[in-house]
Length: 347
Image 1 (cartoon, rainbow, N blue to C red):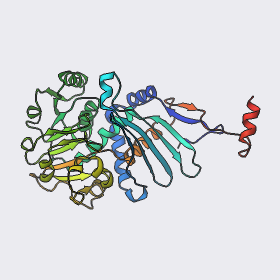
Image 2 (tube, rainbow, N blue to C red):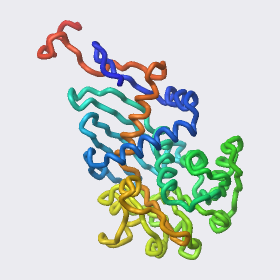
Image 3 (spheres, rainbow, N blue to C red):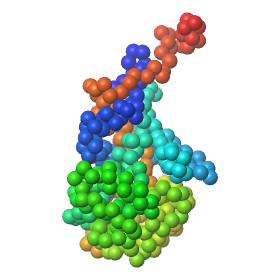
Image 4 (cartoon, rainbow, N blue to C red):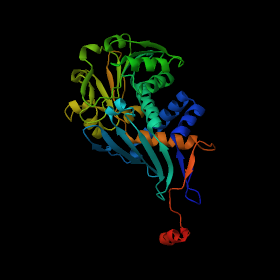
């Protein structure tokens, strides 16, 4: 593990170095590595501190902190969600994250997480689908073709064996962008003009829209038996994508119920509505898909352990590379009790 040096330098992975790291590792290989780390961390679920993210909501968006610790390392992510940003030429989501050594409290990694969040969100989606989607699924509908869409498609190809993606967005330019970016991905890409057209023949349906509102991206009559729904757009209070009747027909799988009941699709349901926690499925304690006719729904909101896993993956990947910068961000006086003296001598 990288640890602070004698001068207390902290490895920092910038956006530029994150892009270099992705290209060096391979996009699909990096998503797969993150997914494997998430699964390994979910299998030691009881080792982690678990708390819903700390959110500060405004009329235009949300700013959140997502902390967790496994007793050896502590991690957090700062992330925002501002759907109005796109119209202003800004990203809807930006993020950065940190890992620290629990024994000393010293940071051991600071990283951009705007790109990394897209990678880990895609990794978690495909990991859940590996356990929940119909066996032999080859076609996915991707409804919402914004910043996350290409990552989702590549993750499902790498982890679930998806061969065809059917794209739809209310903005045709977004669909054209997504299709263009996936042209060399090895996927069969089919742009569609309606959501109904997009789901034709799809065994997996991914919804990923940005507007902060109670939306109905999928109506009840659009969802037939036997499909897997990967609902990742509903991720804060007042923001959903699915008609309520779909929830009643589905077996619902979540990351951490106390958070999902506030932020996810199930905020529309009573607090006692049954859901299954994914860590129990990963560990084999609870069944995932049990029949060909079952509708499985991953009500994804993103949980701190997933970001912890993504940061752990980055920390491992940057070893013996030049894909990080050392930041002088920790005071390091010769005498730990003489911080004032260090300041005085610097003059």
